[in-house]
Image 1 (tube, rainbow, N blue to C red):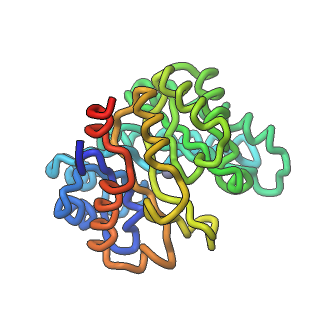
Image 2: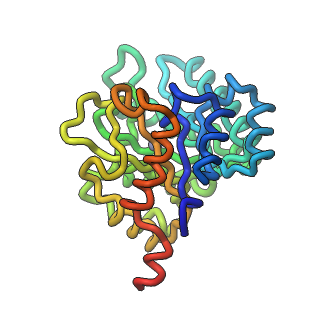
Length: 284
Ligand code: ZN
């Protein structure tokens, strides 16, 4: 196991590179997997994006992102469902492993969190048949509870897996360390997710102390307090052996550095601080 198990979420180098430039820069470091965002794919053009992936033989560990279901009225929810179907088409076109879903928070003016969660379940149920038809796994990403109002009202792995159990096949979870590291039920829920074959993606970065901005101050692996190695061991024990995808939003640090330096640091820290399968096989 090696650098081949590393994927770069292209938000990590968003200000530095277009999608095409990011792929070239990743390949220059021996990194062969990426996860683009929809706006990056759209700016590139869907056909061109698909061709970049194909000709460079890149693995796409996910397309970010669908979701954002809760709306103030039925028309709003219907529009979100349509948009998610387009996201499924885009994910299929670039041969993504999954479509990552950030499910959405409270609609404007609402304080009704249970209703928002119901709309998320309705939205997911509405797009799931289309996702299954297109063989595109849907990965619900639970977000840290600090985002419950504005980004995602699914906030723990347990909550996401409960929704998955209601929906059946074709839906699972993207486990992002930044969002779940604090959860007292994390290890039990990783085991549960693995047992039901629902781990579709593993996002990594670090939690800085102090965190200066709740959205844009994610840390590089090794600079914070998340036990990335222990959590990865648990995920592999649960049966997940997919790539680890670095996803860092860092407006004051990594986004200001040369892309080459950022990618080289991702590779170096991945090898130094994240659990690698080879070691585990030997150690067991
Ligand atoms: Zn993520």
